[in-house]
Length: 79
Image (cartoon, rainbow, N blue to C red; front, side, top):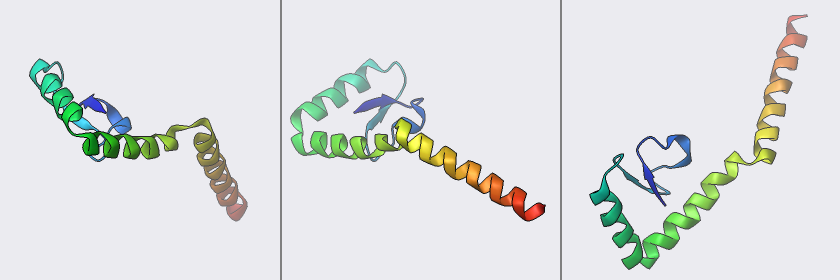
């Protein structure tokens, strides 16, 4: 649950510890923090698992179908 600042939409402040790129000190500090704090580790892990579900193929398919339906509906209204 440690990501660098350029991780994109996979990591958020709610589901990961965000650290500066190539920062050895930040990596070390945050690994120790996760090691010592079981509640934080479990909380971030749980939130990360929930967040990542939006990136499954099933979720992608559902969103893609919704977009196609919107396009078709708009096209039918125009004609």
